[in-house]
Length: 64
Image (cartoon, rainbow, N blue to C red; front, side):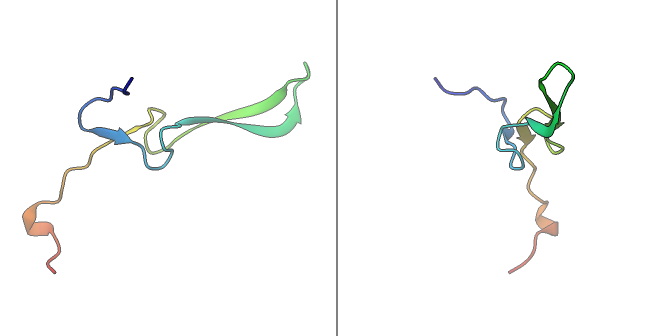
């Protein structure tokens, strides 16, 4: 089964589609479980997808 993505989007290049991660702080909570921080990708804001950027206008492109 193929993943369905909205048109004009691609997988975020910063997080590779894993937008939220849990980081272990190394300390324990009072109930004995590990304290973790949930961190969200700044680029895609937790969606895992980044919009496809439009190409630069012809007048602004570098000339070879």
